[in-house]
Length: 292
Image (cartoon, rainbow, N blue to C red):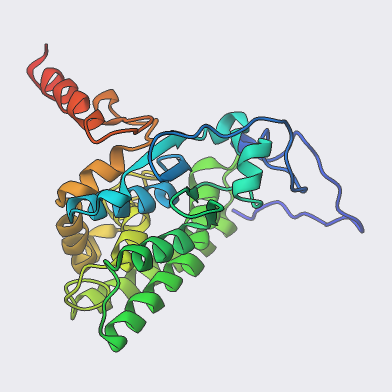
């Protein structure tokens, strides 16, 4: 079936009603829409985020740092509901002028340091605490190469394939095929690399794994977009092995819960202000499993 054609006008104008599911929050201008300060909790690190793949990257790293005994990595994670436009508050725009989650404020320094873009936050925290970024120059370079690979590749997976396959108001063959081809190529890139490496930077688990796993691991597990069969993810056996291996880490399991608003209620920790917050969720999960 041939997709209907579209002739672009001489000058593009914004149609507020277009855009499907996200029409109410997408706009062609930057800056705040309303005045509202960001909340500040008791810990040095204040995270403003949502449990999407980009947000999960950071909460995984923070939980991994805490698991290694870095008390300075304690954090408050505040939920930013992008569906209601919270990312356009004056406070959030001050933390991230691009109005995208996640955003981090580090109050352990004066003045507090803002850090935005998920890859930048990962690198900032890895360098701050001296963890999850290999000391060996060659391995460090490899980890950073894969970190930036993810930052450049994921828009094709999320904004490209994910949008047209799962969220666009109409399904059109051309964009779905175009981005499905690219996603499968990317999965093949990962599969070939992981055939010869335990982790993305070789034998060391690093921020590169934490960046890639929430996106590509979620795809092969069928967690996002529901496209596992469509993309024939069973073909990528090395990606599946790595996805399972990383996903079994306790810190990864905790990081996935933080700021989550979907899935089973017992797996959602909408805000995180103390390590003990997970204990309540663990009890909720046990009760759900027992039918209590």
